[in-house]
Image (cartoon, rainbow, N blue to C red):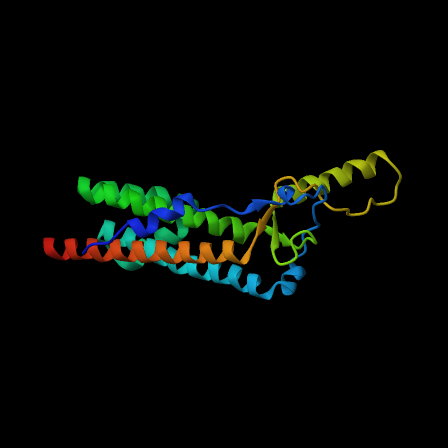
Length: 212
């Protein structure tokens, strides 16, 4: 079993989504999920990213099962219960059963999978909207920005008149612009991660079978 890693290295140098502030605007947006319907192709790509990573997540659970070489029902239950502790559990399993060479290969694959997960998590947990400066793209907003914005409104309401302040646009600081190309690259990044994890699982499976 061999794999050419050169095809995966280019993603280490891929351009990240650009900040909204770089598009010559000082005005941000109010995130609104309903605006996704105005960018149907990009909205579809967001869904594909999330669905593709779900399949990779299953393959990572399978990886832990191969490392522990136990009852699949029990290791799957443990993996799903861990959630935030899953990376540590997988790494501990790898360190307990892999050879030095296998462990080095695991670290490369696990790092690439981690990068794909980070890109997916940002998309899945972010807020979205549109901006006239980037008419074909979507604008990503960190949920913390909305919390900060809402806290500011609350503070002004308490200090000033009794009427509720209007929800004006946020500062563009920290907002990112996702193009169709950006989202397509993240879809491919998740697909590559899934391919590598499943390839490694087959290798470990063969090694386990040879030991029996």
